[in-house]
Image (cartoon, rainbow, N blue to C red; front, side, top):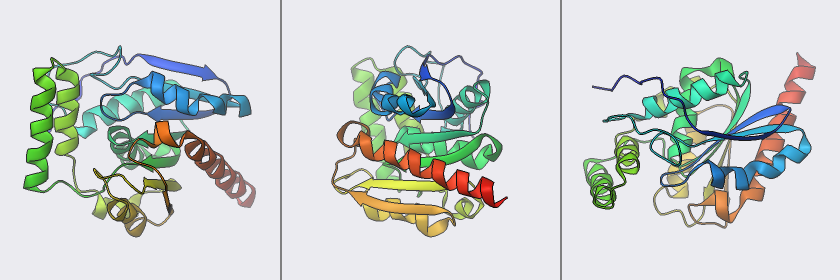
Length: 232
């Protein structure tokens, strides 16, 4: 049974003004890494917001267990507090949260850039692997990371819901991402109507290895939204 998401205040890094871009990091990272990847967007009239997800960075670690919906609820509060109509950029755990926000709160999301995420739920063997990782993190006294790892391992199967995804979406898959191979990430585009898919020469950590491609994807989504506004 999913846990009830407590209202917690995430630590937020932010810079600039204009179009709202919210970056959501992967497991064991934090908003400083997100800001390093997306911060240059502020030179083009954007307001970049990069929260530390629960259990990471300077954000609190509420009691578990957690679900992806808990993490997405935290992110949705951040987006709403900054006025909504955001382009969400997420990697791994952050991509799962971003997708859940877009499906659960479509009115506050203008676009999505996702990387490192399979829309399928884990097999029993896959869940066991995530649990082993969580156990290793607990041995290092990283309870927040462990709880987030367990949440990602127990994520839902989104494929049937993707037909309802209204926000224009770009999926960028690292060719050498072993945790979420490109063939799995391609399924997001296969199941949704407004999604573009591309593979780049990168591992899983696109935020670090190819941030310029993420920034270019944000600019592409802005052009799509501008054309739609003109057409309307």
